[in-house]
Image (cartoon, rainbow, N blue to C red; front, side, top):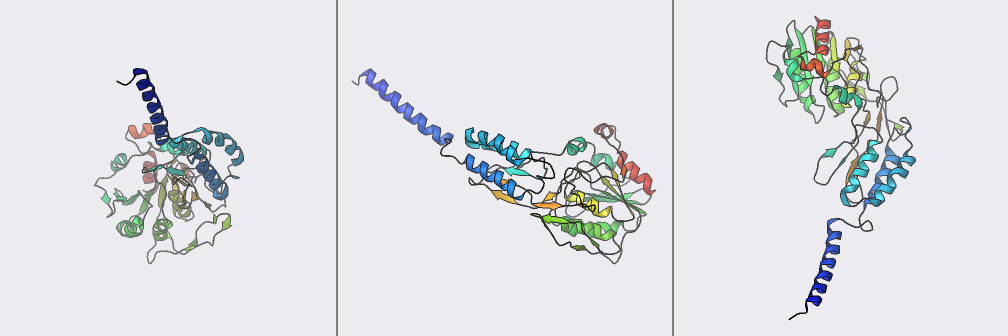
Length: 336
């Protein structure tokens, strides 16, 4: 028989060898993982391309000193927490990262977004119509005519080419109204082609889009052509709030330059750092840091600042719970 003491000693040694081997499989040791490399690459990427460090008065070198020690001590996927908190220091609603096999995670949302995210409801909007609203082919535009011959279109998406295809059809349905409401509350980003597909139907002549800078270099201003042959010149109200963001903000800013357009609601979220720039870290993890500095017509970025309404109508979640859309009601009153 095997001596009991020898057997127990052998079992102990085996278990310890197995434990330490498995430990390295489950959570890589700080020496063998790429957390520090990922941190360095992420910090440098922001330092190299992010356009608003000076505008926001962010000392990125100081941020490095805070988070580098954390990157050295975390194990495995704990680095995501470090990257999240570091990127959140930029206070930019366009910035996100992605976990392996997971979706996009945004470390920061603008305060105005949180203020207004529940102060709008499509269900409450529908109460103001005597007929069921129509839905565009893509399902991204809900539209109809309010009693009194006032047109209404809710634009739910500026992505892909939805509005390029849908809006001409929607516009043709609403073109004979005496006034028109464009509802772009609750919007995120998207493509300029969709913005152009909307604003061009309200222009009687071409106009330049606002300035933008790519890595600090001013881009050549493109000309927005009028859609023609018919331009809508009756009064138009654009509804906005703190959840209107990115492409929704640029659409609003361009429309506000037209003499027949009035923006009603509350100041938009403030996100002008565009550019679909995914960047892969040494380990394969991905972060998105915008490189495009977009400006309003007054020369300022709308990052943080937002686009202000011409007529401010505050609306709260309590209003929605009460079944009231003050911003829509004001728009209807203006157009009657």
